[in-house]
Image (cartoon, rainbow, N blue to C red; front, side, top):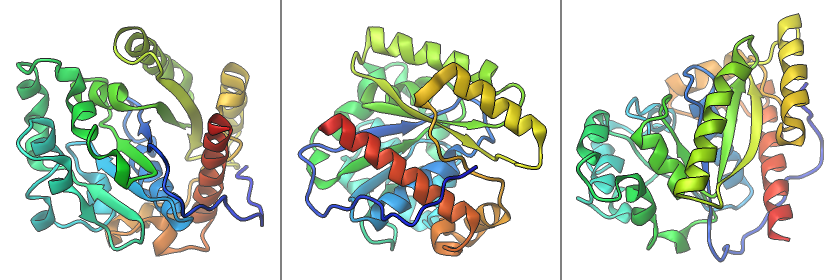
Length: 275
């Protein structure tokens, strides 16, 4: 069950020496990956963390969920990856204090083919971020539901990976492939890459299967699994159609409270790493 508390989230207005780059990734679609990226970014921004969300999914759902219309996507992450524009030219304010986004665009669907001919193609995003790190405390990257070249760019650029995991029967089978990919990236391109945590999503406490999957995941991954879980919640589902995170759409909903709790856990883990 999502652990809601009355304790305030850790806050800070002081800029970090270097932002932490977190990739939100799972090759399986429909697990709440984009919803988690958008609402975690919003919750972090609410406690005075300067957050940049990079929409690396050609579907562009994170951009849509933050109300970014097409006219503000003329320069987007596609142009940044291909070296046609600096990252700063693609950053769009969201209207939420402390939160900006680098949107996705339709051209991104063909980027994997175009990147193949580029030297060090797996490091295009990392290079694009190198001179843009002073402006942010956290950079979150929303990946496509695949383990292709776009996701590889995110893993190479990141410090850590957050894995949204739907509470369903085949969850553990699907995550094992992602864990193997993370290990390969660590050995070949990014030796410091780690799993920041695994968050169980779409948890239905009325369903015995959800309880069993949660038990299995916690037994297998131990403390890597966040205490907070994200429930099935109609307000979470409704929010993107209004171009808003659920934290803005309905702050009092169970989904909003769960994402606030998740942000608290993530920030505490980050503080522990920095200590």
